[in-house]
Image 1 (tube, rainbow, N blue to C red):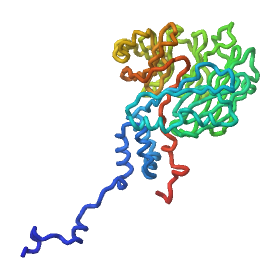
Image 2: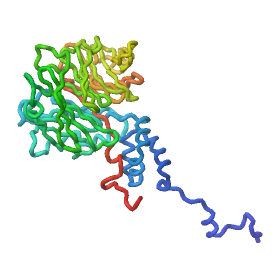
Image 3: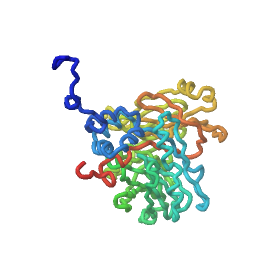
Amino acid sequence: MAREGSPAQLPTAKHRKESSPPTTTVHSLTDDVLLQIFLHLPSLATLVRAALACRSWRRAVASSPAFRRRFRELHPAPLLGLFFEPPSAVQDPVLPAFPSFVPARRRDRDLAAAVRGGDFFLTSIQEHPDKAHSWEIFDCRRGYVLLCNGDRLSEEAMAVVNPLERRSELFFEDRHKDTFEGYRGYPAVRNAWLLCSDEDPSSFRVVRLAHDESRVRATVFSSYTREWKLYPWVDVPGRPRLSKSWLLNSNMQSNGLLYCVYKNHKYMITLNTATMGFSVEELPPFLENRRCSFDVGETSTGARCIVYATDFTVGVMLRRTDSDGVEKWMLDRATPLDTQLDGVLRKQKGNYDELLVVAVRDGFAYLATSKKVYDSQNPSWFLSLCLETMKLENLFQRTYDSGAHPYVMAWPPCLVGNYGRFALEDGT
């Protein structure tokens, strides 16, 4: 018989239960540990799927601005594809004309699932019974798309749509008769800018710029008030004298500053949306070349930048202070991309002789190949260029006969704050 306490004696069931360590499950993880795990997920789309698996996980993500900032630092917002404007201006409102969407080639299954689950055909506005069945796209920012239809000289219907939220849209009117009040000579309204908030993704503003023979004025629509605010006319220098419409359509913006170029390519006007003040400065000399395409955006660190393309060379300009203490656009680097294009496009590179800058967003420039003599039978290759590494990535091939707008997946409103059906219950 085995002695008491010998290894041959088995412990009682009660003793085994009391001495065994507690079972650890995923639900027993603290929020801090959970968020550290989430930082290792490969993309924002994967995070969204994980965070919406249960209420406590969504609450942990949505209630931590620090986690949101850190995740963005580690995982750049992914490009889902590009929206393309209708190939020509809408002439007959009875005939439908909608922007088209082309998804980027991505190996991430969660990004592909996000595109499949979204409304990138914009069916929510097509089904609207009171609106014309023809829409133009004006801007695309932080997951929202700004669209417009109507008469640019009298009244336009506008819509802001979030394709990933499917039926998340807001319709409103822009009546130009108020904007044109007190104008001199011939008035005109330029394209609109869409301003979104990182801290409150459910809110936005729309800014429109009008000009007459020598002045500009801004009007701002707020999603909070659902009303337009009209700002005074402001005189600006450098306007071409024999031109009625002297500003180019533009949706260039960076860090709350909106940019519009004069048609003579001599000056660029800037609107600071924090102060609503205008300023005008001369374009750097080599940007005055009409064959030089460029756009204003941000680097991966959030610094304002201009990215331009001449032939197969892409340059980056930053805001710096010169020896006289004047802040201006100064060249940071210019990188020939011939060798990379040889590797990406191979024999097809010979079909093109230049790159065009489509847009600049969050540290990436989106480019398109082109011929200086337009050839409708030769579609363009669309590429992304990381401004930090200056490495090219091929996206897709498509005819480039109209404006294009990158659609970058934004931090979804459902992962900011605890409200609505996600509100905390019983303090949990």
